Length: 258
Image 1 (spheres, rainbow, N blue to C red):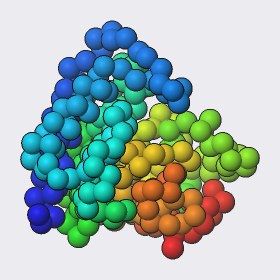
Image 2 (cartoon, rainbow, N blue to C red; image 1 turned 90 degrees about the vertical axis):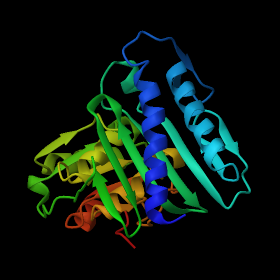
Image 3 (spheres, rainbow, N blue to C red; image 1 turned 90 degrees about the horizontal axis):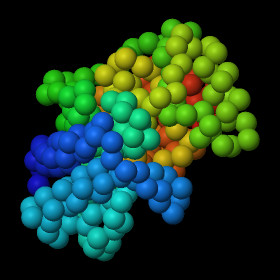
């Protein structure tokens, strides 16, 4: 399949799964705790099943890696990487800043990514060389080059568990015009659409990051792990506009983009 077809497929899966999750939103559903201590609901599980059923029907030879149900066909050349609700804690609280993430990959090369935010009706979709589209129109990161005028985001500074990263985040936040810590995937939406300049996470799984890398990069931004490597599989991420890519990483004590 060409890149445009893969983008369309990723968008369709994200929309279908996200709309299923939205049907449970603010409905008082029961919350369970997984073995890793994170919450899960029937909304997460039903949305991922919806995505898997669609993929199985349309791409039966592809592998699938999802947050809730693990990996199917791990030896497949191409695989789908799913996060049915990125921001489950946000979802549980009735806050609309959560999303559904879908990526298509060959190995660690991301072929397409979609991020759908059902409560606010926003869709981002991108593929390498094809651009990033926000609700059907091209979108770009900001051109802000001064940290003192920047908006910087993180999901939760308590996740910055490295001994000095919390302190460096606070130093960055103090220099910036605005800092906020209700993030998850919503923060990356804000960077990709030019409404924030940096989004920082120290702990990310592949299903948290894979869809977001092409979205940030195709919007003209820079997406790396804390070593400066362009990857969705580094276990963490720093996403910025291009102008502040190296200054933000320097302030955080992270490696500059490679």
